[in-house]
Length: 134
View 1 (cartoon, rainbow, N blue to C red):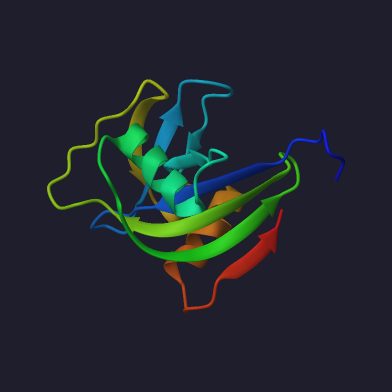
View 2 (view 1 turned 120 degrees about the vertical axis):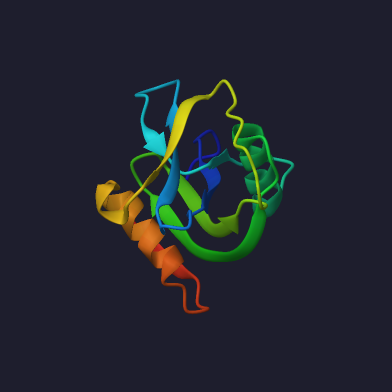
């Protein structure tokens, strides 16, 4: 990797509801896609600090982090993304930021193929962090 190349680091939260459906947010930018809460880590943050900041910004609440389940290299965007299992505090009302227009909970079979792999790895966590390359 050359000195002037760009490289990204991100972190996302897998949050489920009582029906085991996964929380996704619809972006108001780029291709308006649905994605897990979270995002890019700022240079002065740890991965955990960045995850907590991103989730607080996007959901309007601090999430409870349970564990890190996987780290994924996404070659198409030159990024490593960490996936964490998280919970919303009881009786939380989600308050979206300007970056997202809506949220909903999706069944696993409704997720994109890469998203499904990352979420299944998280929900089937055995105590060993998974590393994958896409």
